[in-house]
Image (cartoon, rainbow, N blue to C red):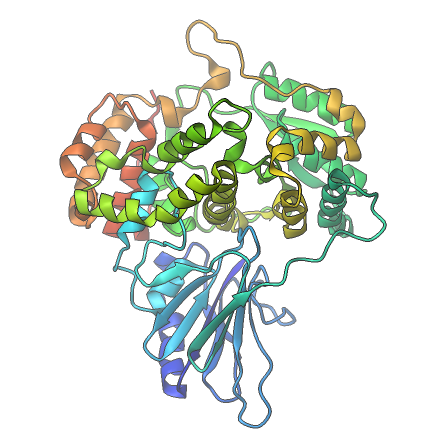
Length: 534
């Protein structure tokens, strides 16, 4: 895995200055080892592309483009040698591009912190990101933790020439391969098979995270249909519904199935290391509640896959409101809960600015409630939460997410929303891929048990007093050393942080923001004391 940063400037001197600053970025703000190097420079010296990663990642022979192919140099113009730099996002934009416009230049990167460093904006924090992290738990729109560094919108191409940017709509991905049987489900199934078919060339089985739910079985069936060798893994205890159903799916498909047992109560965990690492590996855009890993990981050589993105086949957030009485009112309530559930933690000015930023979505909700929820999921949940998580995952594993493939998503979104929210499309796609899997039920929740239920234990939600005290003290202390209380109401934060914690997701978010805004994430590689879970 390597990161890419491109500079296009109005002059050679400006390009050289920004390129030089990008090259001396503090390694503590990037989650993989460097050093950076200039991989390409335009003939006129006014554009450059740099990579940050290991020597193996930067070996000769790699194309001069970002890891996901989202940022690349153009062709020099005849005569003067002026060369544009390009970037592109897909409909899902799960491979993000960040843009920083500075005096006389534009910076493009697939890493927001590197762009912010290069633009000298690493400590200039955007309150909209803090507001969003406390409410839906992920960035909204184009916000990043840094003012003046924005996420490129979905389905967009940006061209930068001589420090001036222009944007156009991206051409959609190619349709599924010709010859597929007619019908919406067949189109989605064909696109899904096309998305995984190149994995046949790897020579080793794909490691599939398989649950008893709707989405990972779709990916499993597509892999088998495409002739890709697969090994399935499920995380849980032997009697959990997910494990039982996943084992049956694997049996029907004829693939190997392993079960990994999770940690039980009584473990000790590195809470401080987790908070710092989450900010670093997820670019400051996800809460430490999420499982995103650590910097400088040992990279797994196996290709891994999962069912991420399957909600897009079912209308995203619209699935929860569709088919109900007063669906429009239900949709409005869902969006309100999602986006403003912790508005009381914000200071009045920050809250007002954040609510104002939601106006386009509230307007869309009034016009077409279910469509607005579907679009909100694509643009924000997929395009921001999944993008940040994916960046973190990719530094430790060779991850493929077929249900985020642009051809799959566009084929699904061409299907009427009512068909998707009813679950009919997902069922029909599964029937196209492997009809016998449609007879296997979905895993439900495990039945309640007396005492501690080890199968459902999650220490992030069920930690004891020592971790609760640590989280309170850390959030308050680091929050005071940063600018957390410019955005967050301190009295409200102190109440939320006082054990016993009633809203643990809010506590994790507050601790994460305190780490981000104070800059404490730069110590993500330092050892920290382990704390008992309970």
